Length: 293
Image (cartoon, rainbow, N blue to C red; front, side, top):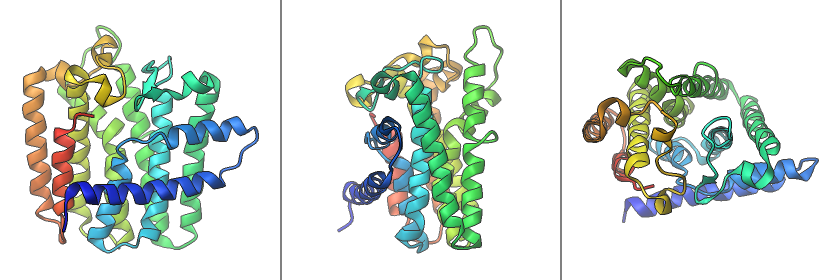
């Protein structure tokens, strides 16, 4: 009998086992490089991106062996971004997922290199997949675009740019940050699964991925305002302290919550146009909207 929690745990466990097996093959010299990479990669977390990839692959009939390497590459890129985000020069956070940030354990220089190592290893994983055929090349290209200077990195740069005091901003600037900093790496799992299924339902899933990215970031902004460190596993109130451009800053907390509800409703509506059993994705939308961590 299907339950969201049990299915989520199934996807999460499948990915964790795959990531751990890969981590065991990672040999570096000096060892501290690999140790710092693995420390953050296996630190836990919700694993929303790999779970999203596996769930969409199931809907579209994509084999686990095809999607798992891309799920790993996406999570490596996500993890590298978190390591760098936590550095003193960026968000300056001492905790990640309830444990000391990478730079607090291994030092700033090693943390930078661990992030670099994860990013480059993610691309190595993709290059290996490219040898399997054309659709794997398209999937790898899509991921690199999502992660690069027209994707996540652009969003991070805009996030830093608009954190400067007295910098003029608009709702469009906030939407840009949302779409790129967070949205691109939540779009990637569903779009890549579609590409591997010969672009089945690509348009609807692309729209869903973008909306889910917006929803995820709005809830992040809300939780930074009203969340609890014990549940979030990271510092609270950092956005306001660092003058971040957030939904709460632009719209206020009450309207931000309304916008989150509207975005969740849009996610549900788009899923109605996807051919297949989307019950898990519907539940995932509610999970993202109502999460406390």
